[in-house]
Amino acid sequence: MNKQLLAAACAAALIGTACSKSDRLIISGTITNAEHKVVRLERLTLASPVAVDSVKLSADGSYQFELERLAEPEFFRLSVDNRHGIILLADSCEHISVTADTASLETAAQVSGSVGAQQLYDLTQRAASLQADIRALGDKYNKATDNDARLAIYNDIVARRDQYKAYINEFVFQNPRSFVSYYALFQTVLDMQVFDVMNNNDQILFATVATSLNLVYPNNERVRQLYDYVIQAKAIQKRQRYNDALLKSAEPVNSPDIQAPDKDGNVIKLSSMRGKVILLVFWASQDAASRKANRQLVSVYDRYHDRGLEIYQVSLDQSKLLWEDAVLKDKLTWTNVCDLQGIASTAARLYNIRTVPSNYIIARNGELIGKDLWGTRLDERMAEIFR
Image (tube, rainbow, N blue to C red; front, side, top):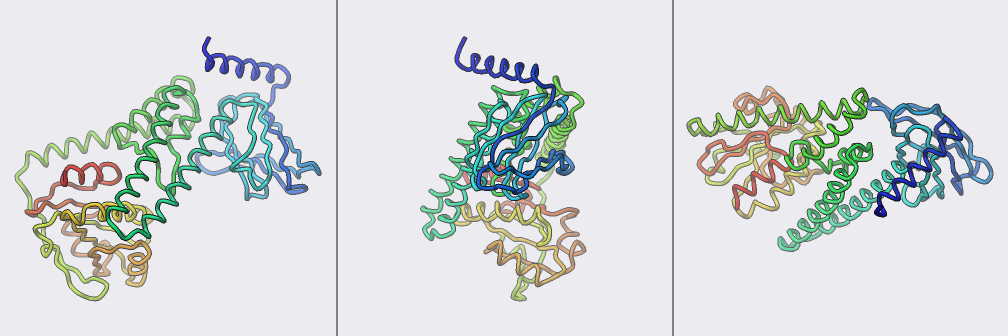
């Protein structure tokens, strides 16, 4: 028996022993430097956290929660005064111990008594480390003035992200029926999801976990959500392939011209950029998805502007103040226009814009060669165009 199988067998034996002593889930431990503060336990549902119980820590910082035996694995949040907290994965009648100092509960807790809880805590620590690294590299990137230096920093960020994804990939295939794998797929770093279900490689992981968990927990709310999520992604991709086939078989279509004022009142025509590859983007300052997309646009523009990429961004705002403030805060240095007519703007009608963010890729000859590509799909398309 190899070491991993032996460890798993020992863990199973320990859990079995715990259940023989008590048919309840127990979460206990000691949190130091928090005497007489309140420790809270919440059940994390898809809708929102639900309070389970709260206790005042004793003089030595000890606490204990007892719950009815769980029918299926569930996620909980353990926190002190709603400030410091960690996510726990609990199953059946485990006896989970969490011991830490208040200030280091998120970063240096001792978690034992549950394989799932220990794996999840390790996963969150790795994600936190990646986030700290990327934030530091992002600061260096923003301060760098040399394009080669910025490219090196960007490549470092991508390499660290890919290294983390490789770790998760291996973990998922070793633990396809674990809710830790489910949690890993939806982790975010700097408010951006690490895995994209529309990316073919990432979708394999989503499908693997969805199928595996569905075999064991077919009625679980999270499993149903994940399973439907993958099915919907595949349906969208199927429609996209159909639309792409129609686009390839159709005669070349030139992009209609539009014109609108920038923040200084200068009217700029889309056709003034003819001869360059144009990324035509529609957005709105108060739309969270648009603001998130702007971060990717900054990266794309920095990589390809010197090679002939221009961005013509049309805001569907009705407030000049909000639009200008967002342009400044998001550091949008390319052409940005707005006629303050919202979704009724001439540009939006010409390009049949129904939602934001939306985009079109326009070739140097004015032909439309892409539509509504974001995330890895936009990165891959740009790499194809400028290779």
